[in-house]
Amino acid sequence: MKIKTKLRLGFGFLFIIVLSFGLIALFFLNELSDKSKVILKDNYKSLKYVSAMRNVVDESNFPLSSAKAKIFEENLKNEGRNITEQGEKIAFQKLLSTYKSLQVSSSTNNIKNMRTALQSIEEVNMKAIYKKNDQANAASARANLYISIAAVLSFLILFTFIVNFPGFVANPLAEFSAAIKQISRKNYKQRLHFKNHDEFTELADAFNGMVVKLNEWENSNLSKIKSEKSRIEAIIAQMQDAIIGLNEKGEILFLNHLAAKLMNLNEGKVIGQNATELIKKNELLKRIIKPETKDKTLKIYVDEKESYFLLEHREIVIPNYEDQDEKTLIASSKSAGSVYVLKNITQFKELDEAKTNFIATVSHELKTPLASIKMSLKLLGDERVGLMNEEQNQLLTHIKEDSDRLLKITSELLDLSQVETGNLKLTFAITKPEDIVQYAIDAVKFQAEQKSIKLELNCDANLPKVNADIQKTAWVLVNFLSNALRYSSEKSKVVIDILQKDKFVQFSVKDYGKGIDEKYQKRLFERYFQVPTDGQNKSGSGLGLAISKDFIEAEDGKIWVESAIGEGSKFSFALPVID
Image (cartoon, rainbow, N blue to C red; front, top):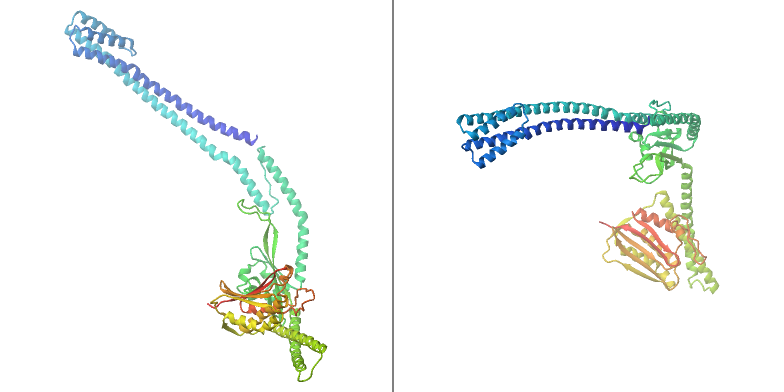
């Protein structure tokens, strides 16, 4: 039988029960109503007629007047038509004969007989009223009894139906829910058995078939998955980098031998433990999982020497197949954990240090002969030594420019080596921003006059002081101005702006040259990077902006560039103000 048919039969049965109870109640209420109506309709009228005739007898003398006789005879006639009780007819005939006798002779005996006849009719109707009242009470009690019995039976039937009938639908659904939960736990032995031959039975058969297919699929892929898992574990174990994997709950998912050695952990015991608890006892693991700084290079003492490792963190993202709340945005993927990789960069670190030391040594060694060359050039340019022809003067000028350029490069290389080795020393002092700018303008004023370039200074009034290394900050500004003058055409202008923005003092140098392509702007502050030129302007070492960035960031400042082709470039840096 189909579920729809069972539901219809169940609700039809409920309808019949409610209808039966209503009909029983209606039947007994009608019976009680009929009993009450009989009392009011018949006996009450007889008592009314008798009362009217007694009033005529009590208030009048016989023979009666025509008006009184008319009232008496009308009530007498009505009573004759309303005889309903046993004995009432005899009393009425006696009353009628007595009334006729009184019309002939108004003796005291006839009046007495009339009163007796009226009293007899009244007594008959009163007894009938009491009797019918008792019958009505009995009918009412019987109706209450039967209605109560019907109500109790209906309640029991409905209560039983309410308790048992929902289980007809809910119990199979509960079995389905429990079975599906078992399947989600990969218990493919779960089966459902229904014998009602309805839709639930058909659904159970389909469910069982699905479980069989899932079991077959699981068995067919289980060996392959185990093989792949073993291969991946072997690859991770043999990797030269330390690898740590956490699941989405923050538990250690895997840990290769090198990682366990670096952190002095037992590989077998920590698998499955919560990383939050482990980092409380292991400082290195804490630095890996919850680093306090942005520096991703870790120095670890291992194999009786200091080694350097580069920390890389990758989140494991998998497709999201979970049901989500309709009110939220459905994500196509979710996090399944994290992987932390420690790459050994000790060899590269040592090479980098060797490179830095080499650059510092070479730069230092070059500075002395370059200074001698500059001194010799100055002596050659002195007319007291002797006059030179025009070609010799041009050659001397070129040599001087190249020596200045080499000296600048060596100075930049020395500054770079200080930064890379951590030996950069800043001499902080509280100073006015105007002093820094004026120092830089004085340094490039002669260069600007040679190209007839106007230096325009825009400075806000009452600027707050900054805490900075005056010489190195001015060096950055000089570097900005030198670049601006180099790439500006003659008789143009370079604008220097100094203004306060939030809690920073902002320094900007704006030129109106060709500008810098957007694809090069992100790399301007990288070391040794140079924007390709058309050959008209000699490029530097590619270190000036990189060193400027190191100087400003060491002073807790920010540095950036804004440029567009054909509109010139604007180099800026900002230093925090003194509270």
